[in-house]
Length: 334
Image (cartoon, rainbow, N blue to C red):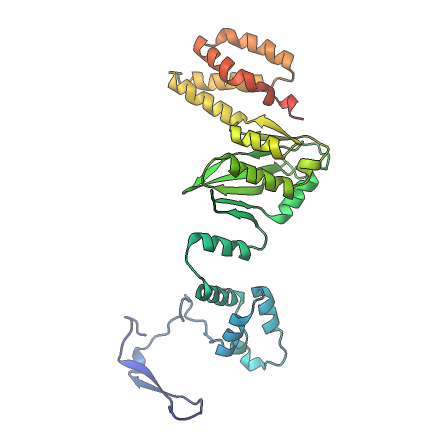
């Protein structure tokens, strides 16, 4: 390697006797050595770091092992019989080297590069994170961290200042697939941060899809079924989701999502010619109604607002929002 790239003006040649059993090799450098410059090895970016090639016997042993990279690495570096001067070549450089070797071995034995096959292999590698994979009639994947599921199940038994509240809806679209997470409040932490418990990856928003998700939730979080407390679950009012929750989670109480309701209302207002000042005003009216401490105060406040609203918005509110406010009040959740 020269400062301008590869050159044949300075070369290294290796010679070995073909008929000999000896492992000796003669290295012969030919040309002008002054043009050579130091270069990093392979993918390395640090030319000042000396590269030591790991012995082929060590690479072969790593490739034949079925243990995790951590176990293999600890086993090889803890061998006391390896002399200090050979440590660079008779033990792996780091755990990343072991991971790379195992990945190459899996690539060699892979039957296909099909995405579905790779998904099953990834599920195996993730050690229990993936709970269900279905490919027909719909592609369905349910996954979640085991410790978080245990944590949620325990939280459902604990009385805390902040009440528990689950939420579930089809939040994201990732390419050709939807992602529907089941979220919970971690009520033992300050400000009760929102934590994902389960994820559903699916192609279509069918009943079967959400049934599979709720079946897994009932199995993995037993207190959603056998617990003594009713647990509110906020959704975006999709009928198939509501039916799945009612079918498999008897302790869950369906609650309508404020954000979805108000966002739908904003779309309606824009479509019907509301001004930039009217939209936040109507939004404030609706939020104030939902925050009323009891049904009596709600009805009293609603009668006050009816006088201020346009007839078209009043009709919309009474048809689309008023019938479901009983599932949106703060005082009815717990």
